Image (tube, rainbow, N blue to C red; front, side, top):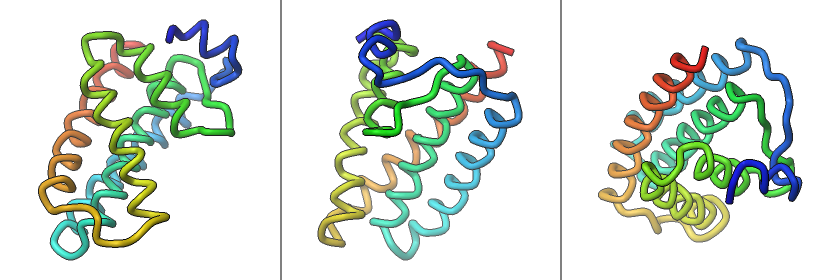
Length: 143
């Protein structure tokens, strides 16, 4: 789905977002990466969840930098739909992976604890770390 389609369907909206808000979202993503690393030694479900949040915050920073916000209904889902449109086919596999992890995160937070394996949590943390670096680079190039 293209960005114009997301706008027309109301899944995202145009909005001027300050550079400070973009920086704040990136700062939160970095914080979440640090916290997720600490949690990995104790609790994989929560380490996974916090690593996922780092991805979400970085994705929001990219949206903000491009002048968009997700609709409040299904905000996470709409953020990843935007991400797919903004990053294009070059990063389709990564966005698809993050969207699957979005569903897993729902299970970890709202379902039964203990469903996230160590390997899965550590894989997400590694991909989240690289994604935050990618978004930092893209935001810097755009400014």
